[in-house]
Image (cartoon, rainbow, N blue to C red; front, side):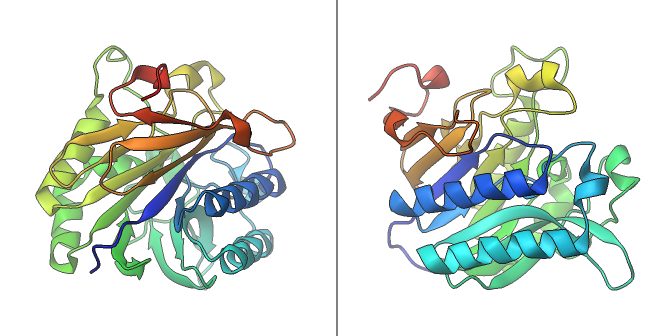
Length: 284
């Protein structure tokens, strides 16, 4: 819809057990992203509550509404749009694992409910159906949540007529057991195929840690941005929390590590890195 440059921030936040802590972290990342010139900030799956076994306690409609109100106020204050994971609630009592798209005025303009649930997720969440496409910052956007990247034929059939330009890909993903040395891993190759088939940018925001299975955290994070050609623009650091800011279509990003237990991102750690630099070991 537009060709003007778009600055996007990707959050790989520390995961906390409580929604209050996760929301405080989200608000800090929104402020930092806006200060860095980003007009859109992308968060992982269930970013407000955390993606862990305490979801049954955290996923309460009144609590989530309060946390989302703070996020929407932050979007309006900083004039920045967000794509953020949170539970949503149907009138029939069903609970969905959703990605909410909020514009720079703080209005929630679309909700993508996860349909492709894992078996454990399906014991708590209901399966979604629609995958709406909406406009954020002049681009037609939607989301494919975590393992739904495997359902590529179904997703393409849903989205091809809608002609999205950006697909957000929130999740908590890592390589399959026994394939840890394969690069890129199978889920990233599937995302590359999706980008090519639909001619879209795929922007992943992947949790850099697991609270349920901390022993697997060393292979998490590493959020990837994929061009419409299927080419990987860059991957973020593996198993590290922080915020990346980049211009859509370019290969460089600025990375700020998050390590403060008080949730404040460490702004002074920011550096620019080029695609193909493992774990951002060398600057460009």
